Image (cartoon, rainbow, N blue to C red; front, side, top):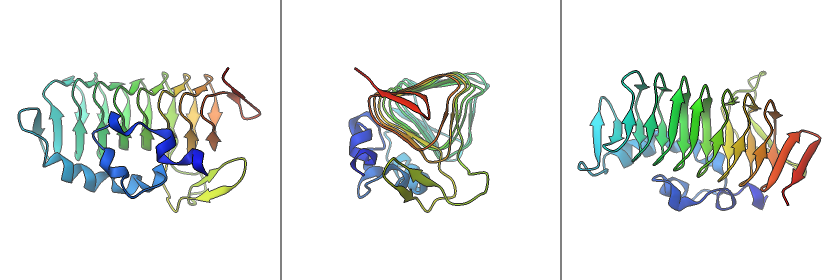
Amino acid sequence: MDALKNTNLFTFSETIAASIFDGTTYPWEVLPKISDFILTLGATLPADEYEKKGENVWIAKTAKVAPTAYINGPAIIGKEAEIRHCAFIRGNAIVGEGAVVGNSTELKNVILFNKVQVPHYNYVGDSILGFQSHMGAGSITSNVKSDKTLVTITTSQEKIETNLKKMGAILGDHVEVGCNSVLNPGTIIGANSNVYPLSMVRGFVPAKSIYKNKNEVVSKH
């Protein structure tokens, strides 16, 4: 399905990780590659722009990292990014330029494109968030099905096997997720879409849509 392709979800010029998408068609194909990609890319980052701290953690010198934040490698924190008080980065994380990772937000095996905001009590695991996407306070990605079976992508036309046990959500560019929403495993939200607060989202939400509930997804005018 064309709408699920990387080229229709993301602006590759807005991430330091653009080359990880080479040779892939769909975003879930990228998730198993994040750790090795960070190790390779981190070793090439210029020392005048990035400082290596601890084991396999590269932090841009212009980034702001609160002393109470925890960052486990491998991880790359981009230029002008802000890692706030008590943020918890568990590893395998690329935080884009100008991105915000806020209080009590937890990241694990993720790519945040530039200017992504996950600023308040968010969990983002095994997920990719496109350029300038935003998750409201308390909204989370659920990355494992309750029955522990492999994650599938459900669209109006088909079910697609990912062959992954863990997959959270994929947000295209400029997606807005309302407060206290849950994005279930395998959720993909097309670019420029909005999700109402307190939503439980599953499957595919087309680009330029407003998700009110599972029975009411309307196109933006």
